[in-house]
Length: 227
Length: 267
Image 1: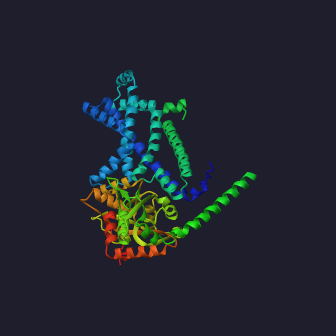
Image 2: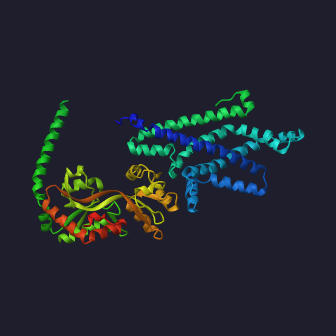
Image 3: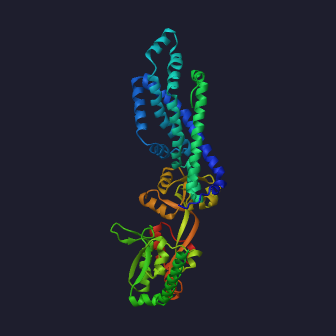
């Protein structure tokens, strides 16, 4: 137990670390936005769509939630290429993350939709709200507000899971770490630094979600909510 | 403190004893070539855990380019062969303690090793190459500009390719398996790897074989011998020279490595 920590050996690589953090943030941001839209549409489709839409969404959710993310990434990255189309590793990574997180989002949002009491819909009808208005004001927004904490942790998980995309050569934070530790042989220090960076990124994601929640959910802002 | 002194003295005595024993033992090795002829057997150390140089086949029989080269050398020297199995870190100890007469285990010639042992002339090379399918045309290093060049992250192949192939888009994977899949599926155009990896791909995929486009680096390897074994080294060098000329060594190398030895070695 006489290991000498030498974090200074990593200093010359700060630019690489920063590039890795930046790409991780980009991948997570795009996947979060698109995944949220996909998931919400799927949730609406599953609770209020035509029978074939319900079946389709159910299939999608079950397949994605019961296969490993790594397998999905390989299928998309290598599968598309085998069909003769070249996609950039980052594009394939985002695509896989969107497909993956969309399925999880769909289930979370569906739980929110189901929590809206029937009387609310009847009240909306009595007030003469149109169908889109009912959906926006009475169903979707309150539903998402209720499951917002669950969504937040799902997207933190997504950010952490983006580390897997290093397997298909996306040069995000984990890929950068793997390269730096094989350059410096300072693997202990490298992964500690990367761990701390991921921790910081998680806080950034949480704070971003909290701020976003304050802006979007008026009631939340008035009541005041914890992070 | 007292205890330490005693143990240090004991160590020194022991070390001196070993050194004396070593110097006494040395004359017995002085002319290994004589020794080999007298016992009518040559002991060649081969690493059977480093394909395609040394490995075992389905029947646990040793095969590989080093194994076949060792057989060729023994035949040329006119004595039966006994293969001594070594692993790469104990190649030098086996040689120095007399467990083997010489080492043929993809033994790269380095200055560090030359301080402890002697090397024959090189009889093979370990290379870093750029390989790809026929459809991708590469004549020299400038043709790599704009190509997607795959490699294994952090390997010596990665370092060599990254410094040499300026302008190529480096695409890094964590292992050879993923790299190969990326190349075969077309996610990368070329790979910076070893000819052995390429050969392994071609063995399983004979329809569209990969070929070596460029050689980025060549590390020659040679027969490792004890220092001062000049008679044996002379004999081995003669065997190597004649068998490089008549193509036998190249035939063995090509069969296992999927690429020929460099031109200048065959003269």
